Length: 174
Image (cartoon, rainbow, N blue to C red; front, side):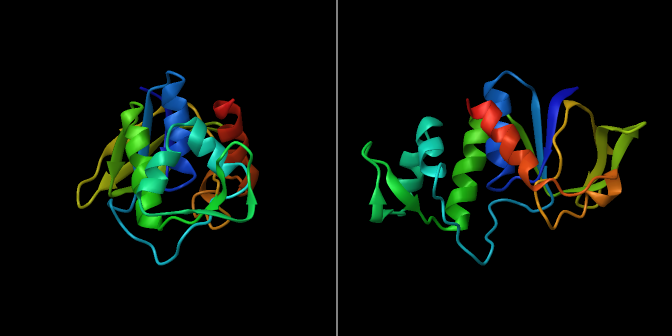
């Protein structure tokens, strides 16, 4: 049994899974995409993002991916750039590798067929990888969908809680 199951393995979910694993939880991270995979846009990491990446020991990896800091507007006194704009392929890879290094079990190519419920609680998932079926897992903890475009939120009777993943990540980061 897993302490938590995180669905989606990109820039919000991978750090959430990493932080939960660093706190001692047994974490399963699943995504329907196979990795590495590129998406046709970049990502701007700003505000608290560079400091969090630094605290997690990942900022050097982002910089090493060929992504220079954006400092023309503001540069913090602690030497961390105001913002970074890594390619998504590089960022997703760095965050996913850090999650796995923290002890997260990662499975890509997983299609979630249903969330298993116990009354009003989600207690697990059922899904399949490629053409196989029958994969199942159960968490002890859960967090809500983090994307406005989540197709899973209506299936579990919840609205997309845009701030839920952020709050969970902030709590785990402190």
